[in-house]
Every structure is written in structure tokens, then in C-alpha cells.
Amino acid sequence: MKVPPEKSRGIISDIRNFILHKQAIRTLIEFSNAAEREDYSYRIMQRTGIDVTHYSVLNIHRIGIEVPVRYVFEELLSWDGDSTCWPNHIATVDRLDGRLEKIQIFLLGLKKFKPLFNLNAIKFQHLPGLSDDNARYLLFESSGGYPIGIFAMYVRSPIAEHNELEQTQLFFAVGFNFYGKVQRSNLSIVNKIWENIHNRATANILNRLKQLCEWRFQRLQDGRYNEKS
Image (tube, rainbow, N blue to C red; front, side, top):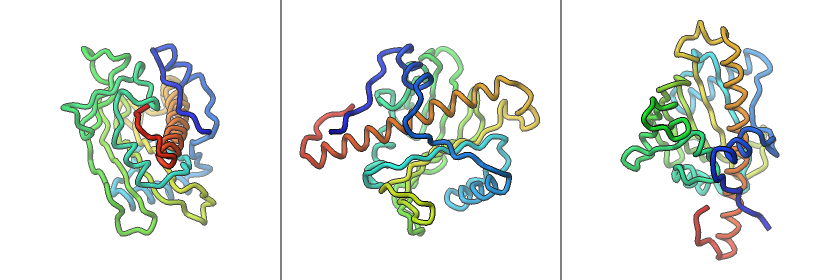
């Protein structure tokens, strides 16, 4: 019997669940060389029209989810501060006018200060395009504190050549340059620490999304889906 993710109750539980916790499934796609990074960059540009080659950091995380693609995409569309899959006490989500197209994220919910991120929609692909992998995605421009760049949540069917097994392959992609300047991206250890925290939190978010989607879909199949978690 599948169970939903535990809901965080405050800043301490956010730190425990999203930063200190070691995720069950590793999600970060690591580039072994520049050519591999270039290949992934080309794929992103081909699918979304966004060129990420000029970003000093390109982090892509992937996880397989054993539910249909459309179901996972609908879960992404419901993203807000109530989600059990997001550290909302540390990075508080504010959907402007209740819309997913414009989001501000505030550190510790301190809305009197500058947002950590302003996420403005570039494109939402609600229905599969011409490709045969059943792809859908949410693509945002990111500004505010940092990173400065793009953020994408992308879902598609598995590709057999890549040894992907689950019905849905979910990707989180972030391209950014610290402080908005490529030449300063490698000057501070703070950048590396932030990137490591970002990767740990993202991995836990994806693991929780997998757990939530599979739990909810099981309840739906059992005729017991009547609540939001």
C-alpha cells in the first residue's frame, strides 16, 4: 500500500525533509564532459526553443513515475504553497492573482523583502507537440534574487533507448548564471554551496512528487480519491 509524503509543519521540518534528508532515488543528471552537456543543451533548445548554452550552470534532474504523463502534468499545474512536495516554509510560493503564470517565491515567507525568485511564464505546453514522446512542459523565466535564467518542468513518455521504464519521465531543468554575470560564476564558494543545496532540495522534491502521484493514482484506481495532500 502506497502512502503520501509527510507534510512539513514549519521551517525545521522543511530543513529536515528537503535539505538534510537523503533522497531514495538520485535524480541529478551529471555531465561527464562538455560534449554531453552540449547534447543536452541542444535537446532543450529543440524541445522548448530556449538556448541554455550561455548559462554557467545547467542542472537537470530526472525521475520516473509510474502513472500516465497527463496525470503528472496536471499535478504540476496545481503547484502552490499547499503542496507537500515543496519546502513552502523556507521558500514560500505566492501565485500572483492566483495564477500559475506569475509566481513569486519569498525566503521564509518574508514578503516585505525582495523575492528570491520571480517566475514569469514563457510557455506552457498543455498538449503534446509533433514529437512522438507525448511531451508537455511549463517553462519560466527566472529573475529576482538568483538564479537569473530559466526554469522548466517537463514530462514525457519513456524512451526505450535510454533504458527508461516508468510511464512518465519528469525533468526539472534550471539554467542560471549567479548574479547574472558569467564571469563571476566560479569566483565564490557560496555559489557551489548554493548549488549543492539546490540539488539536494530538487531531488527530494522530485522523490516526493513521485510518491504523491503514485499514491494518488492508486487511490483513484481504487475509487478512493477524494482528498488533496
